[in-house]
Amino acid sequence: ALLSGVMFPLPGRVTNASTKGERRRLHNSVMVTAAFIGGSFSGLVCGPIEIIMIQQQRFGLSIVQTPLTLYRKFGVSFLGRAVSMACGREAFFTAGCLGVAPVLTRELRERYGVSESTSKFMGPIGAGIIASTLSHPLDTFKTCMQGDIEGTHYRGVIHTPR
Image: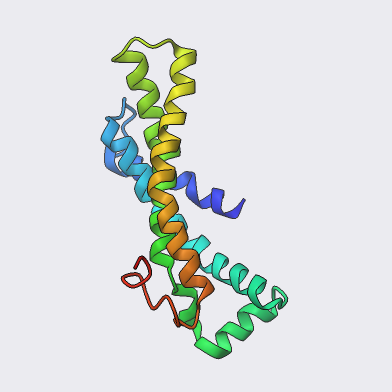
């Protein structure tokens, strides 16, 4: 709920900033870009939450003990481990859901004459395929890095995909 509370309003804010509050039909690129930017900011929230969750599962500590132990061992910097990957994952996911899906739906209907019901079915499916293809590798890299908080096997963003 917290993540959705961050993820969904931000694309609207970005859209309003790009249109200066003017209500008009949005260009496809504005829809996708606003969703991408808004989604990327939600990674700043979910990244630190997920590292605590992953480490809690790894060591079996309580929800309070886990962040305290991580703080004592690594300082506050542990919260930033793989946040860039979380931001990227959330950016692609949100761009797919809130940007590409409505764009594909509209394009199928207006450009190709596909019925409304079919375009509302096919647009999100196509967007989901695109978004998952782009976001899942980033999620895997993020999870590897956050699981290996010591950096023994996954030293950083550049080294993790190898």
